[in-house]
Amino acid sequence: MESEQDVQKALEKHRMYMGQRYVEVYEINNEDVDALMKSLQVKSSPVVNDGVVRLRGLPYSCNEKDIVDFFAGLNIVDITFVMDYRGRRKTGEAYVQFEEPEMANQALLKHREEIGNRYIEIFPSRKNEVRTHVGIH
Image (cartoon, rainbow, N blue to C red; front, top):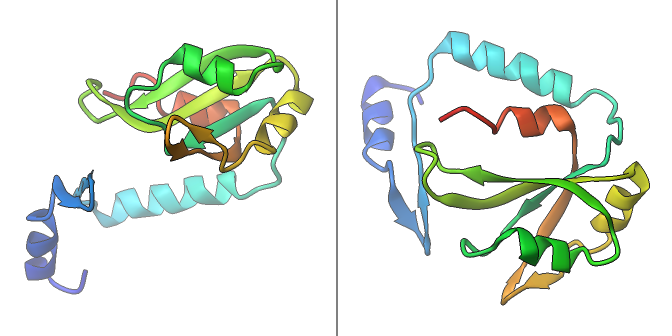
């Protein structure tokens, strides 16, 4: 933002809806931006497949059984749902750890297939990304 007034105007949009989803807006200082940029540089380094994928677009009612059924035939070790900042509601994202890296590659082939009436986006991920979403509330 260019001015403090712009920041305040943006903060007023916190938890307002964009379509059917609400948007969270937080103020961040320059030191936090620098730390974030460094972490993004680490994430952009060559990807090692450790059998994890990230799901986006899940119905809020989605549970572990829905995901196991979605990936029928692939052995899942762990499922971690990403929760809102209070830890109360699912955000529509989850991480799935497969038994073998090859299974994660097979899971990526289901990109944009549906659970219920929602298409699910599937992205390669890593175990350390899952850890950033656990215990942060």
